[in-house]
Image (cartoon, rainbow, N blue to C red; front, top):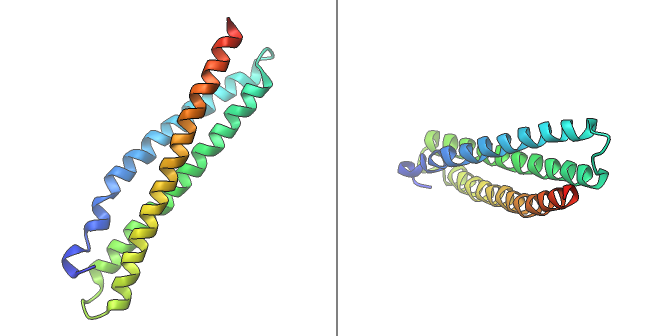
Length: 130
């Protein structure tokens, strides 16, 4: 990463921040729904368990996204304060960027899995009520 490119990792933060915000909203909504289902004696226990697994999936996604944000910030700092002749630190910053992009990918894959399964769970819930 050249001295002029130190800001690249920082430019990714708004997008990751939006992913974190939307995932947090999903987790809060699911948590509220679970709170209602748990108090409902008629609630299907299998659906409740599936929703708990979904909440866990969202939390793992959030963790991956938070760690990725931290790595992006650290790599931006390293790139911004490191002189061009200290190649080791600049390489470290590049590696952190690649690892953080991998973490973002993991978070997105977990969100894709969440979305696919959420549709199946909702379908099961609706079919149960018919």
